[in-house]
Amino acid sequence: MIALADVHKVYRAGRVAVPALAGVTLTVAPGEFVAVIGPSGCGKSTLLNLVAGLDRPTGGTIRVDGVDLTRAPEEVLTRLRRERVGIVFQFYNLLPHLTARENVALPLLLNGTPLSRIAARVEEELTGVELLARADHFPHELSGGEMQRVAIARALAPRPALLLADEPTGNLDSERGAAVLALLRRLNRARAFTVLMATHSVEAAAVADRVLRLRDGRLEA
Ligand SMILES: Nc1ncnc2c1ncn2[C@@H]1O[C@H](COP(=O)(O)OP(=O)(O)OP(=O)(O)O)[C@@H](O)[C@H]1O
Ligand SMILES: [Mg+2]
Image 1: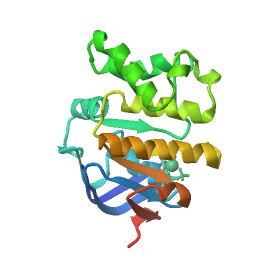
Image 2: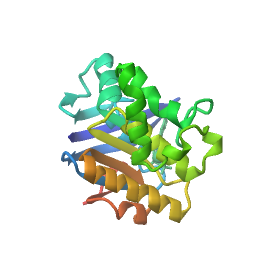
Image 3: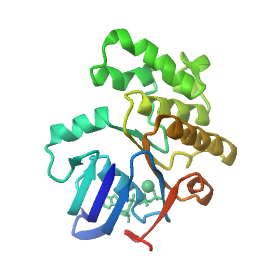
């Protein structure tokens, strides 16, 4: 599902070059749940952004779901993100003026899902994260754990082959965090999508099939 070969990413901030990734090679099989763990600044978000096709590497190659991200034109990357890749962030990134139901419906409206199918799909996704009862709540009327579950439902609504999660429990206490991780793990097993999750928490990484350790932009053996 994911294959990186000798991926480098150097950010330029003025005259300073910041090497965020320095030769990362990895593969993730379909359906696998892989955690990337490492300290702040080691390159986790950079890695996820590259795999999401939100940014391009300065060296190496990245293949996601059969697409060579380093060569694909922008519209192919946009289609990949709309149809094949879901993303969950630490701070949920829900739209504040839309209800939970409307937030989950949004990616389906954008990817051209027939209107007649959207309402049922949204209810199915909210049921999957056990939040149908909160469907008409706005984000500020939800707890942190609930907001993250809505964000997961939104990311999964288009039925992506790959879910990228950047510190999905970073803003939650350990109990709510554990509940979100258990939910992700259960959905990953039930639907067989692939998960690549960045975290600096050893407990969070423990739910994964495999843990990769990133330090200073390199994977540790
Ligand atoms: N847009 C940018 N411009 C310049 N430098 C950047 C940019 N984004 C990230 N960096 C630098 O690249 C390195 C890796 O950053 P990244 O955000 O990938 O780390 P991270 O592992 O996700 O950290 P955290 O756990 O704090 O989220 C850091 O040194 C950071 O300062
Ligand atoms: Mg980060």
